[in-house]
Image 1 (cartoon, rainbow, N blue to C red):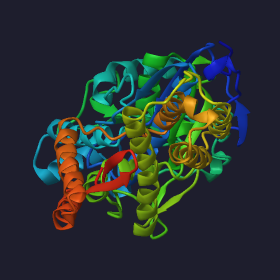
Image 2: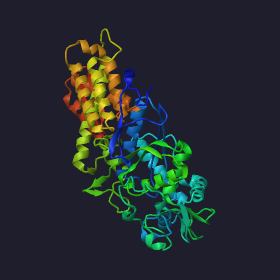
Image 3: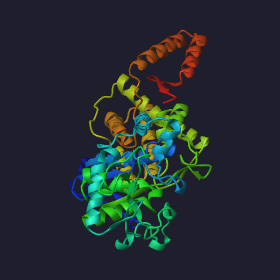
Image 4: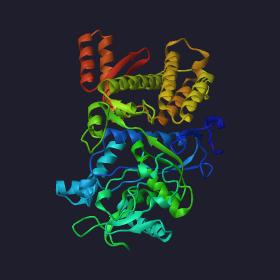
Length: 489
């Protein structure tokens, strides 16, 4: 397989990714042909994941799904920050996790474990596939200490009474990603350590006294790691010294990722990341969704209100680099578009199950293959999900026409076309709804309704339909049978 990957039919396609470092789209070529090593910044687990988190992680899920669709062996690592980092100048010496644990009167590890479970519950419901490896920062303190020691040996650090700092003046390209000069860099905690040489110097190790619950022994005394060193240590441990892709939020462009890059490349002398990707925010009333401001909707709240599949569909309707403003109208429109695709999936499934198609051809039709190429062209353009969705809508219309028109030459490809449609939809985490045993109960109700209609007992038929509505199930009669779709899904 070539560096660019292969799509179905062994057709070589070119994927371009917008690289934040260069501010342009670049042809994607992984360091090792056929293998992609990707690291994405995970949550600091001191609260419930909100819808903005879900949006970011759904974006990386789409990236991983598409790379695997193209035939790459993808190794995805996403961390949990369970040590925390300082919330503001006023919280010097106490990180987010310790502060929240004190508020709730629980041990920090109990707090962390609770919110990691909440994270998995929400992301699993949203069909966000778990990364291959999901390391916790507290399990990698030794690696962080070794990385700091290496930086110390190379002359990139200095120690103060408060901690160990990275001297950014010794890394000439420090401002390359943020496009800011060192003098323009703003850093919290500056006023708390007069021994710092420069405002942009960042903490690698923060010293802490016995009153701080989460602390570890080190060559520089008891303390805990700085936020930035965590990701460098964990990513390089599992993916090597050069990553193909590093993903995070746009808020990481100014500080976190430049710091990661500086300390990693200073330690290894190698390029740390080949392609930097950043996901845009989700806003509420044009303001950033944020836990620290209290302006957010939890992923769990959204799932309970709209259903996990509808929420997930909503999350991918905008390009990952586009800011999305959350509103009721937008998610309702996303729900209707989602149901249109579900209607197609159920209709074709039932048609293939109940109808006989003579001389069925196991290969997709020419038109379906063209749609596949259009879908890939959209995704190859920096993972353009809105364009890819528009292709799926066109594909859906095409499949529906095959069901209502008299038998045509294309209908012999219906099964293959449907399977290809499902394959493309899966890249965007759109799958037929799993009903399992519930389907049998619904089919009984639908059969009873059909019998009532046949006997012209419309009162009973309507009653059954109304009962299904209370169960959040849509039903629609087709010439070849009745389909049903969960409303709250």
